[in-house]
Length: 172
Image (tube, rainbow, N blue to C red; front, side, top):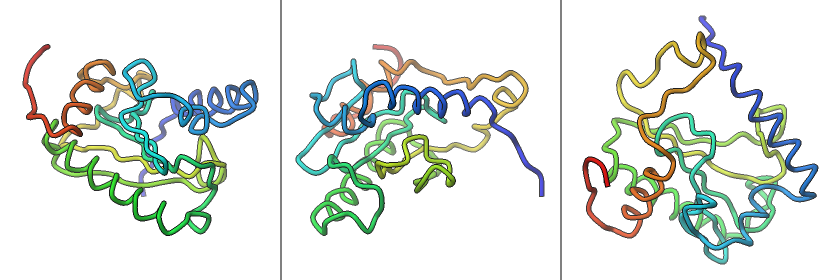
């Protein structure tokens, strides 16, 4: 089996841990107190869920879906939270298809620090759109991930798409 190393991700994990200890709370709990908007990358917030872009995306359109309340595992979710979070995962999938036309998705979560969670105490899903040929040597050799658009542009496209607006191509 071959292994590809993404050493650039360790800086994110270390930074997220340092920010958590400085804030005294986790990223998702802090974001749950904020209103949706492009400055904080929050696309939607309800009484049970928060949907936001990843500040350090694996790919353009990388969205995270988390319970609004601090929950460490799937077993901690209420039935209502489970239903709403799954509904948001489906809405995000549809919105990404509308906005970006990906050929596939990676959908997943890391439960606990040992499993790779950068924010281990707050359950969250990653929804990452994928296209044929979207990986290259840059993260491994160059220590950089190449993204084809800014987070501001991604935010606008995803906010419009979640609202059911047709996708606009090109620059805005």
